[in-house]
Amino acid sequence: MSRSAHPAGPRHADVLPEGHYAAPAEDLNALDPKVWAHTVGRDADGVVTVGGITVTQLAEEYGTPAYILDEADFRDRARAWRTAFGTDADVFYAGKAFLSRAVVRWLDEEGLNLDVCSGGELATALSAGMPAERIAFHGNNKSPEEIERAVRAGVGRIVLDSFQEIVRVAHIAQSLGKRQRVQIRITVGVEAHTHEFIATAHEDQKFGIPLAGGQAAEAVRRALQLDGLEVIGIHSHIGSQIFDMSGFEVAAHRVVGLLKDIRDEHGVELPEIDLGGGLGIAYTSDDDPREPHEIAKALTEIVTRECEAARLATPRISVEPGRAIVGPTAFTLYEVGTVKPLDGLRTYVSVDGGMSDNIRTALYDAEYSVALASRTSDAEPMLVRVVGKHCESGDIVVKDAFLPGDLAPGDLIAVPATGAYCRSMASNYNHVLRPPVVSVRDGAARVIVRRETEEDLLRLDVG
Ligand code: LLP
Image (cartoon, rainbow, N blue to C red; front, side, top):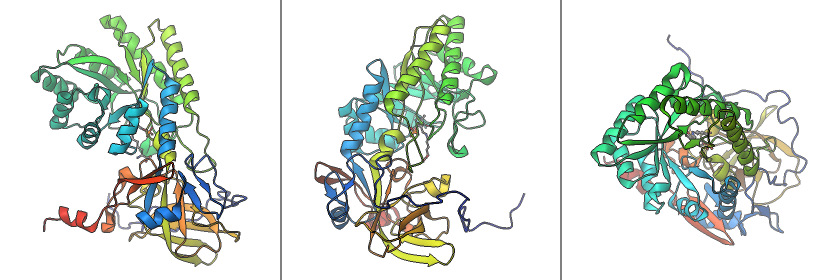
């Protein structure tokens, strides 16, 4: 099939859906604690502060755009997950959401484990001193070199994703004289209630081995026979930005069913199950995420109940939250460059970043909120679309929002809940330089990932 037309951008020229953002928030200066990091507020002059520092100071010192990360909030959330699951379960932070060496150290100090899914993430984790036995290695196509590095380093588990990988990891481990602890990732046929592109446990997709047709059972059968592997459990990840626990319920039911079949066939009770990540956060005031202790209670109850019914000892549970830990802890600080009212439509507010620092709006139709950060304003609300500086009309950061009508070039605006999958999915499109990540805590700020420079770009371009 050929295509003769190409839309200018996925979100080009569409209009507000009826009833959507029908009215602005009562007070545009208010900062809803649901979407902002814990220490965010406004000072006496109305300037947004985080960790005791104003955004104007941060912009002056570090420039814009910049991701501003609240370290105390990150630690709070990491600890809340750790505490909620207790010592009988493991929390693996999903590094793909955002990883840096500072983050690895915080996780280590707060007693969390780490899920990595590439050689680069593994290198970051190891270089920051995360003990290898607390690292899980994921991926649907790990290279032999990556596998060898992980096995040599002594990672606590490799999550096997295909029949070929079962043999590959077993062979590499055996040739190194090791027995590698592994989990087998299965797809349980659950499609999480979220955007199609990021739902991962239905069967028509690249991850895992389907439970259907006895394939997962066959994978376990083969893995149990290989000397290079110690099969410690089953892994299931059902999707992303999930609010509804019913998907986990079905997944746990099916995973436990497989554990029971394995016990009946092989006389082996696998000691662990991992239910993945995917728990949702609030991007706008309309979202109502659950607290870690509620999630821990729900998941533990589901697994315990299913195991009792199957007469199995309850396995050790692990989870892999990424977004739910780091997502709400950061906001992106931009400077407004132009304000362009389009009569009868909306006002386009162009900022100094865009789809290169936040691809999620263009890619997933994600919703974000935005606030005027360098001052407050009593001006009438205006309907805006916050767009970037890229040569593409789909370059949208916040699709529909309200900002004060006196917004002007030079104002700083902040987009909350950009801690997850923004810096980690950032690109150099149009040779725009990737922003720094600045962490703040107790009145002090420091760069944990520096801003890219033109020299960085030119260094890769060898002429
Ligand atoms: N565990 C596994 C095996 C995963 O594949 C993922 C995410 C997670 C844990 C962490 O999920 P979280 O708790 O962060 O939702 N780029 C997309 C999300 C892709 C998620 C991929 N896997 C986004 O920006 O929404």
